Length: 72
Image (cartoon, rainbow, N blue to C red):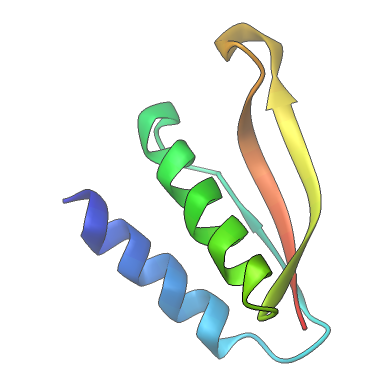
């Protein structure tokens, strides 16, 4: 189930035009968010996107609850 969500996010990111930003996290469960962060960090290390902003949630041990990414 989690992978399907990641596939959806991957597709959204793939369809972004260069320079466009996308906010991820709305409607994503906290336990899934960690996987989203890992996906984005891996895409960032490959040079596909840039993580512009990471909003940390103090209620959940400062785990990111939203990420803003930009297509490179």
